[in-house]
Length: 96
Ligand SMILES: [Cu+2]
Image (cartoon, rainbow, N blue to C red; front, top):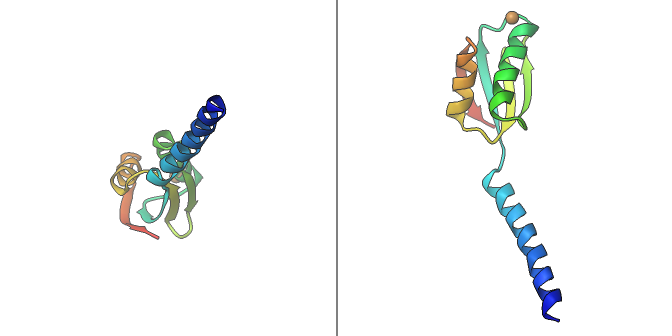
């Protein structure tokens, strides 16, 4: 039946587009050394500025190690700009 086929193709197309979006928006994990964090407020301000530009970012910041791990679709440049825009220095940023 044609109608059944159409509905089936639509479903397939939906799944296909979903997968395609997942691939093209693939998240990456960055490890970033940050200088200048002194308290939980610093951690929060960096977290907020990153979440403002990627609401789905997974952010794990160690104040003790001055290190952030961020799982995001953002580019390295945008991550660095967000952190430095919050008033902190990025020492290094690498894909892990
Ligand atoms: Cu602070």
